[in-house]
Image 1: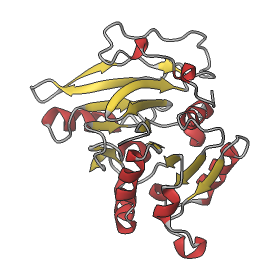
Image 2 (image 1 turned 120 degrees about the vertical axis):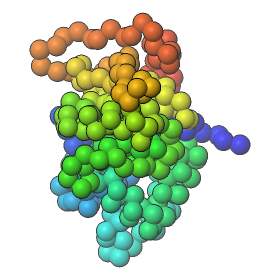
Image 3 (image 1 turned 180 degrees about the vertical axis):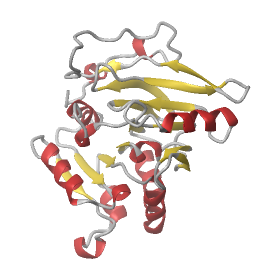
Image 4 (image 1 turned 135 degrees about the vertical axis):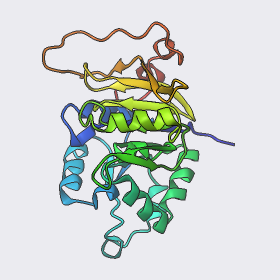
Length: 271
Protein backbone atom coordinates (compact mmCIF):
# COMPACT_ATOMS: atom_id res chain seq x y z
CA UNK A 1 0.00 0.00 0.00
CA UNK A 2 1.27 3.45 -0.89
CA UNK A 3 1.62 5.53 2.29
CA UNK A 4 3.03 8.75 0.84
CA UNK A 5 1.69 10.96 -1.98
CA UNK A 6 3.70 10.95 -5.18
CA UNK A 7 4.74 14.47 -6.13
CA UNK A 8 6.71 15.94 -8.99
CA UNK A 9 7.59 19.61 -9.44
CA UNK A 10 8.71 20.41 -12.99
CA UNK A 11 10.13 23.92 -13.44
CA UNK A 12 10.38 25.61 -16.82
CA UNK A 13 13.38 27.39 -15.35
CA UNK A 14 14.21 29.11 -12.10
CA UNK A 15 15.23 27.95 -8.68
CA UNK A 16 18.63 28.77 -7.25
CA UNK A 17 20.17 29.00 -10.74
CA UNK A 18 18.05 31.99 -11.77
CA UNK A 19 16.70 35.31 -10.47
CA UNK A 20 13.58 35.18 -8.26
CA UNK A 21 14.16 31.49 -7.65
CA UNK A 22 14.03 31.25 -3.86
CA UNK A 23 10.22 31.11 -3.75
CA UNK A 24 10.22 27.97 -5.88
CA UNK A 25 13.04 26.42 -3.88
CA UNK A 26 11.18 27.02 -0.61
CA UNK A 27 7.98 25.65 -2.12
CA UNK A 28 9.72 22.43 -3.13
CA UNK A 29 11.00 21.93 0.42
CA UNK A 30 7.51 22.60 1.80
CA UNK A 31 6.14 19.59 -0.08
CA UNK A 32 8.32 17.24 1.94
CA UNK A 33 6.25 17.88 5.06
CA UNK A 34 9.42 17.61 7.15
CA UNK A 35 10.83 20.05 9.68
CA UNK A 36 14.36 19.41 8.41
CA UNK A 37 14.03 17.70 5.02
CA UNK A 38 16.87 15.90 3.30
CA UNK A 39 17.39 17.31 -0.18
CA UNK A 40 19.84 16.03 -2.78
CA UNK A 41 20.88 17.91 -5.92
CA UNK A 42 21.92 16.05 -9.09
CA UNK A 43 23.88 18.30 -11.49
CA UNK A 44 24.46 15.43 -13.93
CA UNK A 45 22.98 17.20 -16.96
CA UNK A 46 25.65 19.92 -16.81
CA UNK A 47 28.54 17.59 -16.00
CA UNK A 48 28.54 18.26 -12.24
CA UNK A 49 30.04 21.79 -12.48
CA UNK A 50 31.48 23.33 -9.34
CA UNK A 51 29.52 26.55 -9.92
CA UNK A 52 26.14 24.83 -9.69
CA UNK A 53 27.21 22.86 -6.64
CA UNK A 54 28.37 26.03 -4.91
CA UNK A 55 25.16 27.91 -5.72
CA UNK A 56 23.07 25.01 -4.45
CA UNK A 57 24.86 24.95 -1.11
CA UNK A 58 24.72 28.75 -0.84
CA UNK A 59 20.95 28.69 -1.28
CA UNK A 60 20.15 25.83 1.07
CA UNK A 61 22.80 26.43 3.74
CA UNK A 62 20.67 29.23 5.19
CA UNK A 63 17.58 27.02 5.55
CA UNK A 64 16.79 24.18 7.97
CA UNK A 65 17.47 21.19 5.77
CA UNK A 66 20.13 18.54 5.15
CA UNK A 67 21.52 19.39 1.71
CA UNK A 68 23.75 17.10 -0.32
CA UNK A 69 25.01 16.78 -3.89
CA UNK A 70 25.26 13.49 -5.78
CA UNK A 71 27.99 13.65 -8.42
CA UNK A 72 27.88 10.66 -10.74
CA UNK A 73 31.17 11.85 -12.26
CA UNK A 74 32.97 11.55 -8.92
CA UNK A 75 31.63 8.36 -7.35
CA UNK A 76 35.15 7.00 -6.95
CA UNK A 77 36.16 10.08 -5.02
CA UNK A 78 33.02 10.45 -2.92
CA UNK A 79 32.59 6.74 -2.12
CA UNK A 80 28.80 6.87 -2.01
CA UNK A 81 26.25 4.38 -3.27
CA UNK A 82 24.08 6.59 -5.49
CA UNK A 83 20.87 4.60 -5.26
CA UNK A 84 21.05 4.16 -1.49
CA UNK A 85 21.73 7.88 -1.10
CA UNK A 86 18.84 8.94 -3.33
CA UNK A 87 16.33 6.68 -1.63
CA UNK A 88 17.27 8.16 1.76
CA UNK A 89 16.14 11.66 0.69
CA UNK A 90 12.91 13.57 1.17
CA UNK A 91 13.46 15.71 -1.93
CA UNK A 92 15.48 15.07 -5.11
CA UNK A 93 16.34 18.17 -7.16
CA UNK A 94 17.64 17.66 -10.73
CA UNK A 95 19.55 20.41 -12.50
CA UNK A 96 19.48 21.57 -16.11
CA UNK A 97 21.77 20.87 -19.04
CA UNK A 98 21.76 18.07 -21.58
CA UNK A 99 18.70 15.85 -21.22
CA UNK A 100 20.08 13.12 -23.45
CA UNK A 101 23.48 12.96 -21.79
CA UNK A 102 21.91 12.98 -18.33
CA UNK A 103 19.56 10.08 -19.07
CA UNK A 104 22.35 8.05 -20.69
CA UNK A 105 24.48 8.42 -17.56
CA UNK A 106 21.53 7.70 -15.29
CA UNK A 107 20.86 4.43 -17.10
CA UNK A 108 24.47 3.34 -16.69
CA UNK A 109 24.15 3.76 -12.91
CA UNK A 110 20.55 2.55 -12.52
CA UNK A 111 19.38 6.04 -11.54
CA UNK A 112 16.44 5.93 -13.96
CA UNK A 113 14.86 3.02 -12.07
CA UNK A 114 15.87 4.51 -8.73
CA UNK A 115 13.88 7.65 -9.61
CA UNK A 116 10.81 5.57 -10.27
CA UNK A 117 11.25 3.82 -6.93
CA UNK A 118 11.77 7.15 -5.15
CA UNK A 119 8.58 8.51 -6.70
CA UNK A 120 6.53 5.54 -5.53
CA UNK A 121 7.98 5.91 -2.04
CA UNK A 122 6.75 9.48 -1.81
CA UNK A 123 10.09 11.24 -2.24
CA UNK A 124 9.44 14.61 -3.90
CA UNK A 125 10.97 14.69 -7.38
CA UNK A 126 11.79 18.12 -8.75
CA UNK A 127 13.98 19.84 -11.29
CA UNK A 128 14.37 22.56 -13.87
CA UNK A 129 14.90 22.48 -17.63
CA UNK A 130 16.34 19.01 -18.40
CA UNK A 131 15.54 18.17 -14.77
CA UNK A 132 11.89 18.98 -15.49
CA UNK A 133 11.45 17.41 -18.92
CA UNK A 134 12.98 14.13 -17.78
CA UNK A 135 9.83 13.14 -15.86
CA UNK A 136 7.65 13.36 -19.00
CA UNK A 137 7.47 11.27 -22.16
CA UNK A 138 9.51 13.86 -23.98
CA UNK A 139 10.38 17.48 -24.63
CA UNK A 140 12.68 19.73 -26.63
CA UNK A 141 16.35 19.64 -25.70
CA UNK A 142 19.33 21.64 -26.91
CA UNK A 143 21.75 18.83 -26.08
CA UNK A 144 23.20 18.94 -29.60
CA UNK A 145 23.07 22.73 -29.93
CA UNK A 146 19.88 23.28 -31.91
CA UNK A 147 16.48 22.51 -30.33
CA UNK A 148 15.28 18.99 -31.11
CA UNK A 149 12.93 16.38 -29.74
CA UNK A 150 14.25 14.21 -26.90
CA UNK A 151 12.57 11.51 -24.84
CA UNK A 152 12.24 11.32 -21.05
CA UNK A 153 11.54 8.70 -18.40
CA UNK A 154 7.79 8.73 -18.93
CA UNK A 155 6.72 8.86 -15.27
CA UNK A 156 4.22 11.48 -16.42
CA UNK A 157 2.16 11.29 -19.57
CA UNK A 158 2.56 14.02 -22.16
CA UNK A 159 5.43 16.35 -22.97
CA UNK A 160 7.03 19.54 -21.68
CA UNK A 161 8.91 22.40 -23.30
CA UNK A 162 10.88 24.67 -20.97
CA UNK A 163 12.28 28.22 -21.03
CA UNK A 164 9.38 29.43 -23.18
CA UNK A 165 10.26 33.08 -22.58
CA UNK A 166 13.99 32.69 -21.94
CA UNK A 167 14.85 30.53 -24.98
CA UNK A 168 12.03 31.16 -27.49
CA UNK A 169 13.73 29.12 -30.23
CA UNK A 170 12.52 25.96 -28.48
CA UNK A 171 8.81 26.74 -28.88
CA UNK A 172 8.42 26.44 -32.67
CA UNK A 173 10.20 23.08 -32.61
CA UNK A 174 7.96 21.93 -29.77
CA UNK A 175 4.75 23.09 -31.43
CA UNK A 176 5.72 21.42 -34.70
CA UNK A 177 6.47 18.15 -32.90
CA UNK A 178 3.14 18.20 -31.04
CA UNK A 179 1.24 19.21 -34.18
CA UNK A 180 2.66 16.32 -36.21
CA UNK A 181 2.38 13.77 -33.41
CA UNK A 182 6.11 13.34 -32.90
CA UNK A 183 5.47 14.40 -29.30
CA UNK A 184 2.23 13.97 -27.35
CA UNK A 185 0.30 17.03 -26.19
CA UNK A 186 1.79 18.78 -23.20
CA UNK A 187 2.91 22.08 -21.75
CA UNK A 188 5.15 25.03 -22.56
CA UNK A 189 6.42 26.77 -19.42
CA UNK A 190 8.18 30.07 -18.82
CA UNK A 191 11.18 30.49 -16.54
CA UNK A 192 10.00 30.74 -12.95
CA UNK A 193 6.92 28.52 -13.43
CA UNK A 194 6.48 25.01 -12.05
CA UNK A 195 3.93 22.33 -12.84
CA UNK A 196 2.99 20.47 -9.67
CA UNK A 197 1.82 16.88 -10.00
CA UNK A 198 0.07 14.75 -7.42
CA UNK A 199 0.45 11.24 -8.71
CA UNK A 200 0.05 11.46 -12.47
CA UNK A 201 -2.42 14.37 -12.39
CA UNK A 202 -1.55 18.04 -12.74
CA UNK A 203 -2.57 19.59 -9.43
CA UNK A 204 -1.64 23.23 -10.04
CA UNK A 205 0.88 25.58 -11.62
CA UNK A 206 2.88 27.92 -9.38
CA UNK A 207 5.28 30.74 -10.12
CA UNK A 208 7.98 32.84 -8.49
CA UNK A 209 7.44 35.59 -11.11
CA UNK A 210 4.29 37.65 -11.59
CA UNK A 211 4.73 37.76 -15.36
CA UNK A 212 5.44 34.08 -16.00
CA UNK A 213 2.95 31.61 -17.39
CA UNK A 214 2.36 28.16 -18.81
CA UNK A 215 0.21 26.93 -21.70
CA UNK A 216 -1.43 23.65 -22.56
CA UNK A 217 -0.32 22.76 -26.09
CA UNK A 218 -2.56 20.38 -28.06
CA UNK A 219 -2.66 19.31 -31.71
CA UNK A 220 -5.45 20.86 -33.77
CA UNK A 221 -5.75 17.86 -36.11
CA UNK A 222 -4.38 19.82 -39.06
CA UNK A 223 -0.67 19.63 -38.32
CA UNK A 224 -0.61 22.66 -36.03
CA UNK A 225 -1.43 23.28 -32.37
CA UNK A 226 -3.77 25.16 -30.07
CA UNK A 227 -2.23 26.94 -27.06
CA UNK A 228 -4.39 27.58 -24.00
CA UNK A 229 -3.02 29.50 -21.00
CA UNK A 230 -3.44 27.79 -17.65
CA UNK A 231 -4.05 29.50 -14.29
CA UNK A 232 -0.93 30.07 -12.21
CA UNK A 233 -0.77 30.56 -8.44
CA UNK A 234 1.83 33.15 -7.49
CA UNK A 235 3.97 32.02 -4.60
CA UNK A 236 4.67 34.25 -1.59
CA UNK A 237 7.53 36.51 -2.56
CA UNK A 238 6.80 36.34 -6.29
CA UNK A 239 7.80 39.62 -7.91
CA UNK A 240 8.78 41.33 -11.11
CA UNK A 241 9.79 44.94 -11.76
CA UNK A 242 6.84 47.08 -12.78
CA UNK A 243 4.13 44.66 -11.64
CA UNK A 244 2.21 45.00 -8.38
CA UNK A 245 -0.86 42.84 -8.94
CA UNK A 246 -1.53 39.16 -9.51
CA UNK A 247 -2.74 37.70 -12.76
CA UNK A 248 -6.33 36.49 -12.66
CA UNK A 249 -6.88 32.73 -12.96
CA UNK A 250 -8.60 31.33 -16.01
CA UNK A 251 -12.35 30.91 -15.56
CA UNK A 252 -12.50 27.61 -17.45
CA UNK A 253 -9.72 25.86 -15.57
CA UNK A 254 -10.13 22.14 -16.41
CA UNK A 255 -8.03 21.07 -13.45
CA UNK A 256 -9.97 23.02 -10.82
CA UNK A 257 -6.70 24.60 -9.74
CA UNK A 258 -8.27 27.79 -8.40
CA UNK A 259 -10.70 25.85 -6.20
CA UNK A 260 -8.19 23.45 -4.69
CA UNK A 261 -7.02 24.04 -1.16
CA UNK A 262 -4.10 26.35 -0.55
CA UNK A 263 -1.07 24.12 0.06
CA UNK A 264 0.02 26.32 2.92
CA UNK A 265 -3.17 25.44 4.80
CA UNK A 266 -2.40 21.75 4.63
CA UNK A 267 0.09 21.60 7.48
CA UNK A 268 3.21 22.18 5.43
CA UNK A 269 6.06 23.32 7.60
CA UNK A 270 8.00 25.47 5.20
CA UNK A 271 5.89 28.32 3.83
